[in-house]
Image (cartoon, rainbow, N blue to C red; front, side, top):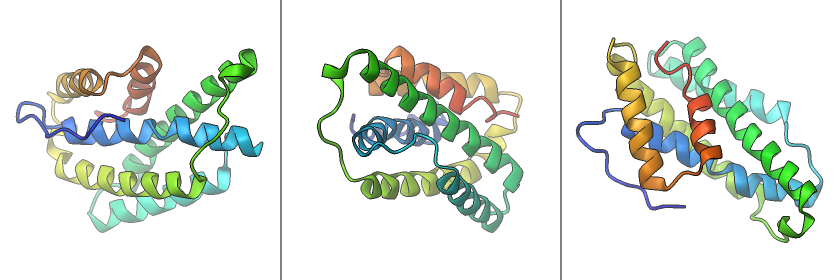
Length: 168
């Protein structure tokens, strides 16, 4: 994972998009853990826990919980899509499958911290997220983060999916 970068002043959504990208990048170690344990990619109980937590954080910051829930549902779906992609690849090329993975609880702790950071960024950037400039700002931030983190086409597509409702 690339080191965190400072938010460029011209990209107000950079920090939010960077956190969303880091959260997407947890898909690989989580997929490896699930592959090795034989666990399912989807975990409805965990999804509900995450959505309840971010919804409560949103309300504590006077954000509409339905907006935050929608944004995080997109984020979770994009992360799961990366995991499905990895599983598909490993089924086609078993030699490429992981032989070790970090403990799932450590990945989840990282995800929880990123979720909290993302909700805080949403609160801080609420005016930008609801401005006429949002689509252009979002595209600029995604391009900057993708370049800074060296995202491959799968991750660029996942980032597009994860952020599709940011400006709505």
